[in-house]
Length: 524
Image (cartoon, rainbow, N blue to C red; front, side, top):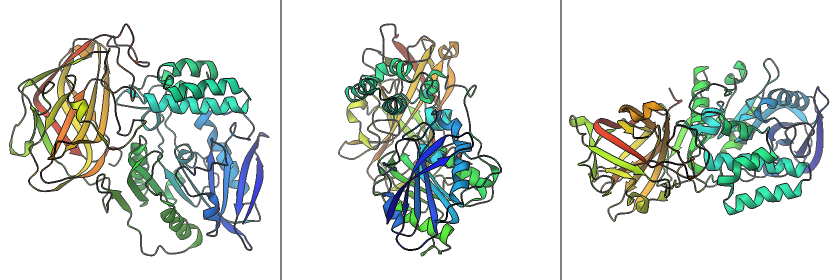
């Protein structure tokens, strides 16, 4: 195996640095391309096998520093720059003597979307494997439910800023950001650090935009022909980009193709052993003409608790529904509120008042927005008096829950701003509370003080509801630092609680409430 440094010159004269791994023997070979902003030497080995592994299986592998990152020239402008540079790289690849004309692309997160951003009418990859990425910068990269992804959004923006400082040899600035990340100060100081060190950066721009409206946000449009290419789509139940992956799946199917889809019980960086064997088989089939042996199911999903894989599809759904009821003590006693099946008629009613004290905001934990993403225990959080809990009776037999959980109920606050922060958990017979999914929604303005029907979607999931266990829905008014703390005055939150943050009381009217499992958003 040989490793070379390469440099591609774009039409505007900017040079893009690449590292190339060539297999042993005589070429030409099919090529796998990854384009990323984190330094080509890393090559996304946080989730994938090293490029040398793919080269050992007969593929040339090219990993590129995108414009303005690593050793590539030019200014980094985020996703907006990728289409012409990606197309130029594909054209260059197919002119090389070691390329047999077949090119596939792979990568997750930034390098997942960079595969899809290409110029209309230019050469396209022959097969793609985008993972944990989406097209909508607002809904798939920066926010949900009108809330910015705070901890992960600020952290990622600062990572990009620090790498920019390193390029400019500003080691003091780099260390300032690093120290803020390691100490946790970045959660409060992040915006000022970004304004100081990366004022034109994509991350700061997102954090300054209103996530409650699509105005001013970019939703990318790949070339129409790209949807006809074979795709392997990869998502995780505990990854914030899952809805972006589901949207890619839907768009591909709408174009008449059937992509491979794998959704694991994974977070953004922990894939439980990875997908390299599957990915290798996918590229051998579509770049080398090898038949998949045995034939791969088109869609597979991993049950969150056991880790078992099942042949399920995003357009399938278990369709359960429950009503919420309480005599008013669901926020005082975690066992008082009830989730009652709606199949037997109206099973909801009562009223609960939940009070948010900004001095001690409810922590966010685990889920898909946490720095500690994944399944976590939350029994202690459910004991707090600013969390209203609603539980089913113990299940008589094991049943499956598949889809997107959605809560609908009437709520009003005494201030012109509040959040609803939900968690869905399994309560075991011995009292353990294992949180499986979370969701958030933010409300601002005078409408907050009117009793209106509110809707909150949680992260989709596939899980079993074992016999003897109960399902619990927890409703809080904060999830710090996963989302910024709502000040209650109608303004856009920007960090943790401050001296001017207000105490917020929210009244939950449970009559006609409905907690249901629906088909996954983006899948239909």
